[in-house]
Length: 211
Length: 211
DNA sequence: TATGGTTGGAACGGAAGCGTATCGACCAAA
DNA sequence: TTTGGTCGATACGCTTCCGTTCCAACCATA
Image (cartoon, rainbow over all chains, first blue to last red):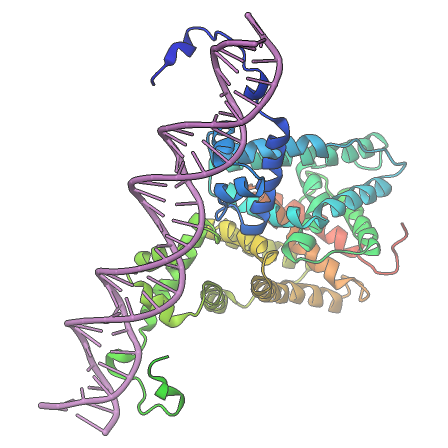
């Protein structure tokens, strides 16, 4: 409130030591996730995050207006790295198996196993977190949707298939086993799960429901 | 540490006003769940729980040695109420449909939708919480296992079916949709889901995996 | 080379929760 | 009727975290 000349015209662009250090931003993201995983979102302390990143609290408060904005930025930054392209496989089963293998790799990270359910719980509490969660879900959905789309084009799945249910079916069992039950499936387990999912998908036609 | 005569012999049983009030214990459990749902386990404050239950903090600390013990007791007490018997239906599909309907009813409660994922996140953080989660899972498992068992006896499912995978398949898609994605399925959705699950179960034979 | 403008770090006051200690109230058993 | 013993509530000291303010350090620009 003291010197609001800046709303008239900035005399000079920030330069030199006056520009935000990208590496510190990165370190803050990392520390944020580690603290989140360790303590949970509710017990997350920005003071600890700053300390873990080897920075002061001002470094955080100058970058992000709130804890939620911080979380959002961190997740967005993370999302960019994860989006890796996926090769196409000749059959639906092989596509699914590959998808499950990749998903297992992600869910193996202890950080992920702790943060994801926390994210879901928080999504049920606040609209902002729900929006963040939706964006994560959207990224996930795109990966699985390709598998589905290809299978329909190859006539391995009916065109009338219920997409929403199909998408659920692809990842839900693995998530359930690893995150909810806390068990990591073997490669053989995944193979069997692939079979089961494939069989389920082929039965996922709308307008056949009869109960 | 001051008067440890009590480890020698209790002179007299608690009586009169010196006996714990069961109704207050009950109120504490309820307040605990409400606070848990509202703030998350990490941010849970026993002071708030006590206030919400209309009690003092001592009422809590005298009953439970720790926050985890409190959680455990509350969940156990809750578990007793939930375990309701389930009627048998003539076909596997109808059994599954009924199971899904009941599960949907449970997952509709906002408290449950907030507490469950929080519980899973916390289970990945502490052994004690993992143990609590395992007990909840066990109770859940029993409900689903009956459905499976009956189907095998009726020859609707092969005896060699992979039980673990089958149990996962029964509830995972619904949990995923409601808790992870935050969407409540319609009755028709559940009917279709029943179809898909049934088809998957019939393919859940061990020793058929081939990938 | 001098400097403008932002940087990151440290310090501050206030709020909140923790776990304990203390207190009068209470009531069946003796 | 007395009394023993726990009850629930309040108060206390301590710790942690919040969000802000202040300041020297810093370096590309002019």
